[in-house]
Image (cartoon, rainbow, N blue to C red; front, side, top):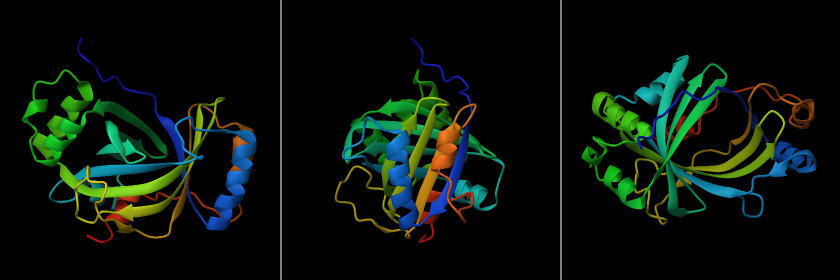
Length: 229
């Protein structure tokens, strides 16, 4: 049966840049009211993503220019284990966003890294078909690796997800995505608090993430990792 990509529901998204002291406070608060994501190891996991852009850096320029409606593609796996890997399309509009996702095999990812895209031409996977179209029409190619640690928390009412992201590292121009020994360097010392929810944000979570002097930001890990080229 053909796998069809339907239009998902947009979710609200807040991003805040915080300090290490803020993170310690938030960690204690969130542990008291929310649950750690079931996929964590000791409350966190490592994320490695490979982002795609074209020769003119359209994705990066749209972010820098504050384009209202934009999208980006990435391949992602967790805890340095590429046996479970995903192709993702992230779409943003103002402070709303959604993500489409489909599984990729290691061999499929290796073909993409080698610039072999023809196998997607007759795919029955809707997201792979979109990705292949973007490759052909926009010239998308692997651009850079983005690594970081994430502490995720969930709260069922409102389908809330709160994450603390830190130790953000860039592979510079390296796209050796499947190599666990690929050299990465720090992309800065930012710590990012992200809050995502559906129709409403419960007051208990709103109170837990409230910090003095913290403002909403449009921070992008991909943008941060492209500061070096």
